[in-house]
Image (cartoon, rainbow, N blue to C red; front, side, top):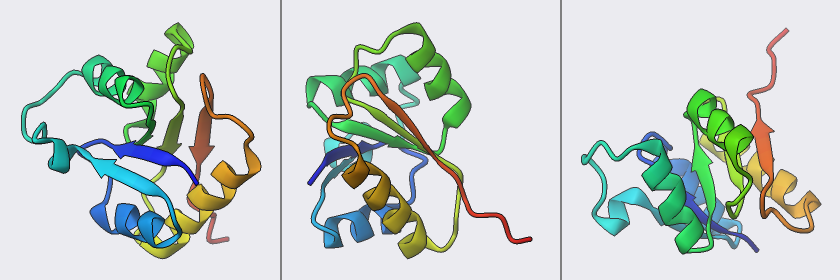
Length: 114
């Protein structure tokens, strides 16, 4: 199972559901860094230092950071889905399909409702 670090905008119910699926999830709230307006670079550096895959809804900024450097444990950039269990399941399935997340970016999108 994966080791994750969720940034401040990531829904806590999704983190909880990922834990239910067997993953280790550290939240920014647990580290005492929430509410500090940390730069995205610092958030990613912390995740890297902890050897955690970063979970975020802040896709634009973290995709840009990934494009500048792949020196990270992995980034999972999601679109918001208020069906938290479904979002956690999509993350779980995507992570399970990867052998190694180091230096990779996964985009997890909300399914279309067409």
